[in-house]
Image 1 (cartoon, helix red, strand yellow):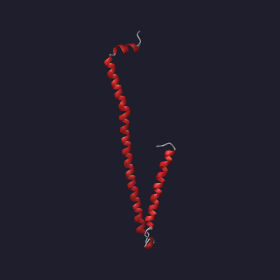
Image 2: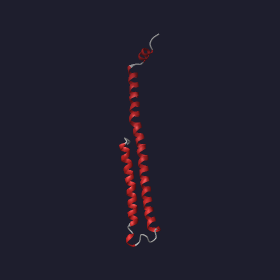
Image 3: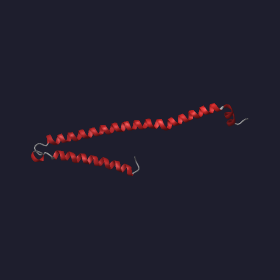
Image 4: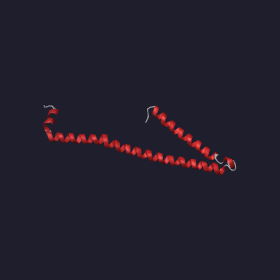
Length: 113
């Protein structure tokens, strides 16, 4: 009984081997280059879309908070105190930005990306 490996090598010609090698190289290149790029594009698309919508929502909430402070506080912020609602919204937005920056830097220190 002949060995199986020697039978397979005898059956395949050099052009057949070259064609199989070429198909293997093309499949590997596609798997290792094109598929990750497609996945990266999907990841970036959803990430950027979420970031834009989240930022728009935060701006609208801050603007709504400003309007709430201006209209619903009665005469508490009238006269020389009209700047206080703006200052409060500025402080809140600064706290949101500081919290986001802290979360990003904490993720980088732990080894996350």
